[in-house]
Image 1: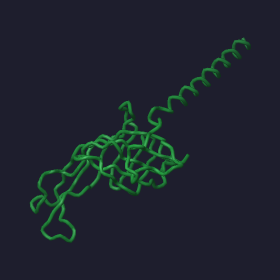
Image 2 (image 1 turned 90 degrees about the vertical axis):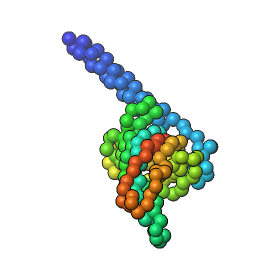
Image 3 (image 1 turned 60 degrees about the vertical axis):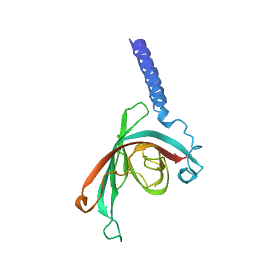
Image 4 (image 1 turned 180 degrees about the vertical axis):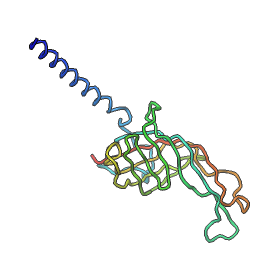
Length: 188
């Protein structure tokens, strides 16, 4: 009986080790695969010394509000209010959310990060620009811990509404659909 218990315990320990290795390997998903900045404008490239920690696809809405232009009497514009998007991995599984203000990227594990915009660069007609932000220290333990930069690339849609913004629409809000890749970087 003692030999059986030792063999069973040995098999369980071996199975636990294999399971640990398997889980460790699957956590290294394509989300953290290499990402080339070669085709991005220099303004939104992450400085050397960083590596991709996670790649997500943000899919959601951006809210704009009709407001009077500052120091321009009688003129109005649609002003960015904030995003509300799901962050999905490359397989389409939800891994977090992006919302604001302030702009906040939150992982399903509860860790989250806000950031300060450093640069934008055009991304083509009808698309919000590429963006580079410097992450503030994360809150909570998890995927967002240690994130130093976030890039917004591969944008689709999201620009301010094309409808008229005038006196009759002041304070009204409109949402527009968008999609963008958010690339999360950490120090090497």
